[in-house]
Amino acid sequence: MHISLKWLRELVEFSLSPEDLAHVLTMAGFEVEDIEDRRQWAEGVVLGKVFDCQPHPNADKLRVCLVDVGGEAPLNIVCGAPNARANIFVPVATVGAYLPKVDLKIKKSKLRGVPSEGMLCSLAELGLAKESEGIEIFETLEGYEIGSDARPLLGLDDAILDLTSTANRADALSMVGIAREVAALTGGTLKLPAPKGIDRPKGNSALTVTCCGTESLSYLHRYRNYWRDDRPFSTLAATAVDGGGHSTD
Image 1 (tube, helix red, strand yellow):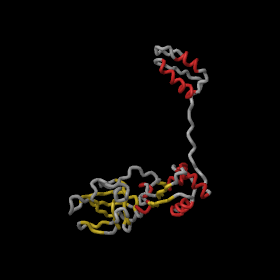
Image 2 (cartoon, helix red, strand yellow):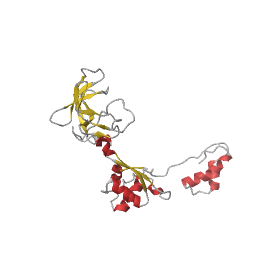
Image 3 (tube, rainbow, N blue to C red):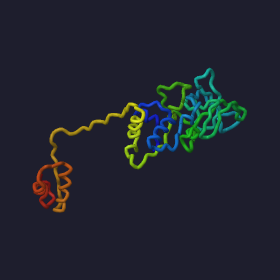
Image 4 (cartoon, rainbow, N blue to C red):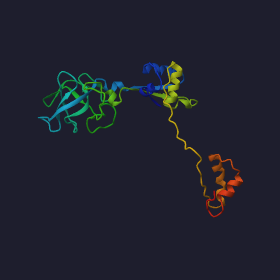
């Protein structure tokens, strides 16, 4: 089972690192097979805005973009994505960033004679998709500034534990179950969401039962148990069935 630490922190308070939490759970009888630290997938990737996009002078399929990443001057980035255009918000891998999913270190370079100072990223390059038709374009940016860390927007501000529980711990096959376990092991406070109330109808509601033939009498047992009808079975049979399929009660 994959355990999102970001989600787990919404259910229980703890300050352990992913490695320390994995050790605590292992000592408690669970098996943590892997720790997937997704924060490393996009370290150095920031939120940028493309405010100008022009065709490359020496290549038909490339574009030259001016990208604001919150610095003193915009970055000149050569991009080959077909959906690159002006006035979009995108994840930008800055110079020095390393993208482990594609084993790529971002460096200053020249593409067909034009300087490039970074890379506009697709989901595939960030490890979030097997294939991508173009760069990722952010639609909702409330609360985020140009140049800020793009990982929260991508869901990459998280670590995932690949955890296996023993056969006798069915209670640990859910996020709530693991949250209770972590609370017991660390002394953290549980923050489980309160269940929503159920609106029950007020007053007495009439129920009409229609039976078609004497064979339906066998289902009266189920009716009586489900609705907790305290009337004797003989009364139910007499009032619910007349052999012709008519409702009588």
